Image 1 (cartoon, one colour):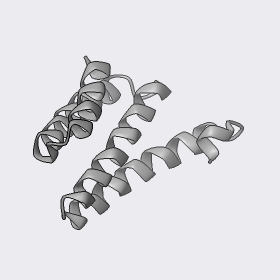
Image 2 (cartoon, one colour; image 1 turned 90 degrees about the vertical axis):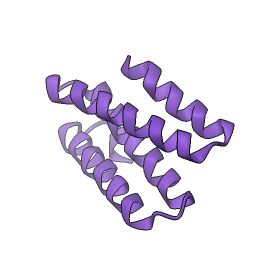
Image 3 (cartoon, helix red, strand yellow; image 1 turned 90 degrees about the horizontal axis):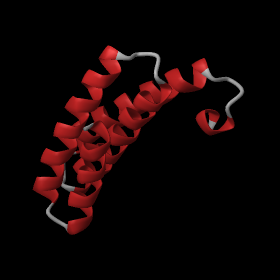
Image 4 (tube, one colour; image 1 turned 180 degrees about the vertical axis):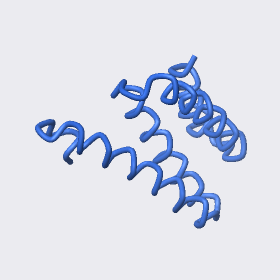
Length: 95
């Protein structure tokens, strides 16, 4: 379900309806956050959550919501930092 919602958010954004895309991103984030809360050590779930927060930040910025955009980017960065700290030899997470 988390994967499907992640795909839906991206597709909705690509179609062009930004308000529908914002709704899809927020719904996807809620599902992904529940998944991370239940499985906090699964790197793939954390990575997906970071990507969704980053994508939401971009979309919020595009729709003129810079304050909310910054919060989404900060969430994405915090998750990415956690992944980088936990995987110091993984160059993907370090970059």
